[in-house]
Amino acid sequence: MSLVVIGSIALDNIETPFGKVEKVVGGAAPFACLAASYFFNKVKVVGIIGGDFPKSELTLWKEHNIDIEGLQIAEDRKNFFWSGKYHNDMNNRDTLETGLNVLEDFDPIIPAAYQDCEYLLLANLTPTTQQTAIDRLKTRPKLIVLDTMNFWMDIALDDLLATLKSVDVLTINDAEARQLSGEFSLVKAASKILQMGPKYLIIKKGEHGALLFGEDKIFSAPALPLANVFDPTGAGDTFAGGFIGYLAKVGTVNFSNMKNAVIFGSALASFCVEKFGTEKLKNLTQKEIAARVEEFVQLSSFQI
Amino acid sequence: MSLVVIGSIALDNIETPFGKVEKVVGGAAPFACLAASYFFNKVKVVGIIGGDFPKSELTLWKEHNIDIEGLQIAEDRKNFFWSGKYHNDMNNRDTLETGLNVLEDFDPIIPAAYQDCEYLLLANLTPTTQQTAIDRLKTRPKLIVLDTMNFWMDIALDDLLATLKSVDVLTINDAEARQLSGEFSLVKAASKILQMGPKYLIIKKGEHGALLFGEDKIFSAPALPLANVFDPTGAGDTFAGGFIGYLAKVGTVNFSNMKNAVIFGSALASFCVEKFGTEKLKNLTQKEIAARVEEFVQLSSFQI
Image (cartoon, rainbow over all chains, first blue to last red; front, side, top):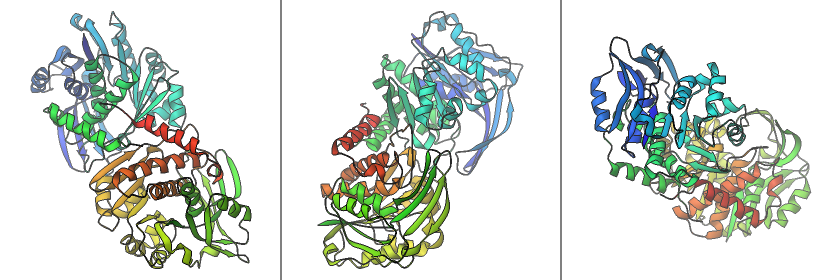
């Protein structure tokens, strides 16, 4: 039984009001895999890297028990590259440059050893590639979580709508929920989106927390108020990885466990933004994670 | 022992995507007094109305046990008037017309019978009028809550800063907290504002809930996700009234009770926005309020 993560693997140039870094590891899969690895020790990655991707990162993943058999290495090609600059409010960013490179013709090959997948995270990628990954698993996973973004709603909406029919959980942000549904009210948006296929919807609201919809229930998770958000890149991917990693660990998918999964995902995301790229996700301890989760409990509990 | 509310009393013309109403009762005090009256039966109002203000509203307030001895009635003058139109997203509005009228030279006279004030809500008004009300109470109330808005930060910042030194709790929205502190991070904003005088700060975030800061703690309250927000006018005033009304009822001011007060205030505000003006606040039952508060409990509780 394993948790398979498929997603982009990038080299990022990032500029925030706090500094500037070049060619740090980014993309959806690294954040998601590292986050999931803190809860579950059978995380397996599917993705593609170019010859310029640092091999030291693969060593790190192995140390985190992340299986890289599904990682395609195109030694003679360049890695997927993204460059962006955050505004002073850290809520908005401009993409300066995108180089798809190896990602352009990425075919998600699933190794035979990955056919034991029970938990599948389709991290951000083209909807057709996400669909291909689903189709190549001989047994339907117990839980399929799909993360996507406005970009695919803009240029590949029909593909996205088709893939949504095959998944259990969709994670998007509030602006994307409004775009996908055409509804401003998030309650109405959720109601429409839950008729598109997913049984559960998570709306990520950044500094305002997250909403989980499903089973005719709503759960509102707080975000930890932070004095400094150093680099928001990958927070959503980290959330998704922590979310599905926690569910794989507990092994039972129900609303109660999903609420906790949202809290654990949020806790991991709150670490992620404290440093550039995946830096902060490399060496967390279970004690640090438990203390951070306790902060969420303290933050939101009341007794009436 | 009483709860005194001082604030504007308006007649509003409101247009939202759901409809249009003319000369409905508005202003900070009516929303706050009605909300507080559901928790505490010694609410006393200080304010001014013109000859065109409907007397039926005074009958309603009396039915809610709201003492109107401190209400000045200028029969030969026109009431404070506000006219506004909400955008389709309901988060932004344009003020079309403001007629200060009786409010222009309002002098907050405190009746002798109001000197038993233990809980004082300084609802939205000029900071100097709020200060005058404090100065005219011979015994300092046990708890002073001040609500204000960006308008006073724009045109009377020094007066506001002076008045802040005398209060216990400040309630403002997130944009106002950023404006007042010059900090984008709400944690840093709160830290600066808590050095300006108030011991507690409540940052109202509309559809994203509210944050309570004080005693080196933070509490994050959710907002009830609503399918329809009919008219947001007065939601913040209702919140403040429910908040202080609940505290007056329990009688002990500490962080734990304040957390509950934020939930009860949020619950009342969630009713407020369901109809135009104060309409929905006129005939709530304790059973309805308890059921709404239970929705907040369900919405935000998790067991880790």
